[in-house]
Image (cartoon, rainbow, N blue to C red; front, top):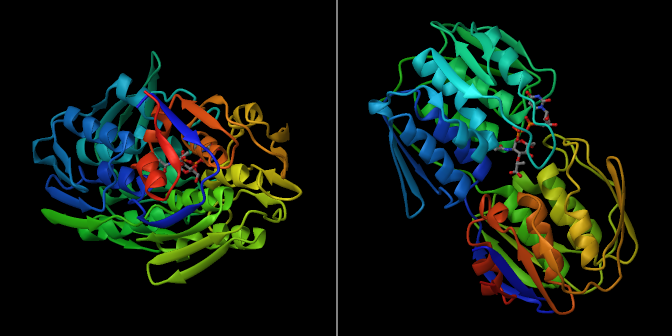
Length: 417
Ligand code: EPZ
């Protein structure tokens, strides 16, 4: 699917099921090589990032398949320990394999992750955590060679609650002798979910999802089965779609508790959000109120991944909305594309000011990155006329069947090619 076509003006109605969490299944797939046994992961979303992770597992010599939402990994046949350069470039979050390969093989070679659409993506916190656990890391020609014949438990004080660094440390610690204590750990639900999977492998984990996590390796179980949590960012994206287009929908398979900061902002805008078990009932009229300043923060604060799509829905607000992006340096790449649709947004460093209430018009726009691409979809739902969104490969990295889902909800959406 190289490009999408959306004709705005259709209110949304109906029910869809929200996919399993991309940012949970990726570290769990990496951790599945720890045991040398078999792992079955259910509620696994069909995404290009997931297929990239499965390709890395196969290149490492594992058997890895995904069928009908069930991923199966058998890492007994693992032989490799290098993350191939092209796969590292294909998916920046491949760095999540660092801790797992180090714990399983005692050494790993990976290319320095380039930047990405969101700006420089350093991995200094990952590397210093691996060194705390006993790894020796050298650089040779753009590659990182990490060696750790025997990882040992240690205290790891993270300078920033990095999601990936927390995950890499937990996974490496599972293969270390002794107890590891991680302070200032990321508290995202995906961290809790990784902890639950590690426990299913036989690892002793406590505090996952809080700022202080302890991990102690133990004999692994030969088989582990795990159901991935719902994707809170995908859910936030569909709420933004209703806010932008108007309508009434039901989101099934959601964990409302993971969405508190997001729901609070949309309710402030006048979007109706009611929880019923694992479903969210979401409704919105045509006029919305601008929220108070939205500042992105580590969990449980407002998630940076929901900033672009919320911004697109704020274009339907009567008044100005202010955003402050504190997590990534370059997360406003959707703004120039939204301006091509008539949006009035000014950016000054980390601050963006959105003047809503102006009519949007269809345009040809290019998806700059995963969540920025979703923001263009959200804006196109409310634009007069037809938009064509190109570079949709970014969107497919993280959203399962998003066009089919929007069409099922009544949007005039489809593939343009
Ligand atoms: C995870 O990325 C998510 N990706 C991101 O989602 C998400 O935006 C991010 O966490 C924050 O919630 C996955 O889980 C696969 P970080 P990650 O380490 O782990 C800096 C999406 O759209 N930093 O918490 O890379 C970093 O530069 C993606 O689904 C260092 O300085 O995020 C950034 O400014 C996008 N040194 C900040 O911390 C390090 O060693 C947050 O990064 C690591 C990170």
